[in-house]
Image 1 (cartoon, rainbow, N blue to C red):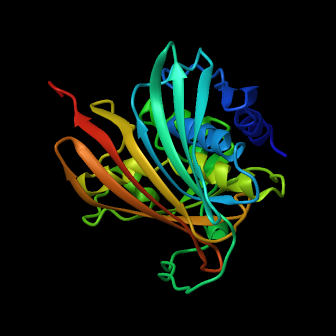
Image 2 (cartoon, rainbow, N blue to C red; image 1 turned 120 degrees about the horizontal axis):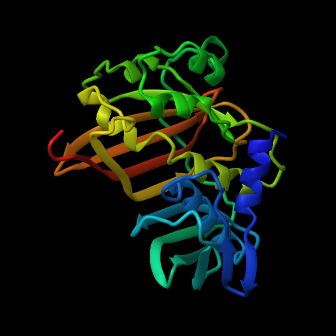
Length: 287
């Protein structure tokens, strides 16, 4: 297991304070605010720890305030309902006495039914794409410091972009972006862990897809970017430590808000999860 994955699993391993109360920590890496995927993953872990014998199939969340990485986050779980087939939980993330994030999650017992799915896009396999370390070594010397720091940092999720040219300002009118993702080390076999890790990873690049039609990225210091809400649906079993294709697009951007969608496939073409997000992409005044 890589050191970064070990740190991620420790971050997701919340401390139980009471029956429905949990405490999470943030990595001490000098971030100005808590990474949104971390709060999504931790809140989902909190919800999962109050449900037995059924897995989460969907979550819907709102980011209320920026998280303070220097302070612990308290997760308060409300047990809305436990039915024969479904359970519903509501989670509130609290810092300094104020709510910073809210999440609703639904759980279902395993059962059969009708099945269909969209096909996976035809893209190069991950082995044919440069690894992050190679991307970092081959960056243009004039690349922004934020870009260099991003590819130099060890992370628990490996990312291999297909359309790497988008980071050089190449526009794509439909805002389509594909990236292979996986945890950088072997995860435990518990399927709940894999769903929580994928929930963490799902926030990594999705908002940035809303800037592709404009030839911009969130590395641009003239853009203020922040996730506003996040929704995710889990369709089929998967392993987050094996390659998954994250296919993203952005149907609309308006009012300083960008809307992005994502479909996540196993490398043999199974659609395992869908994601939708709206985020702030505000051009800063005077830039």
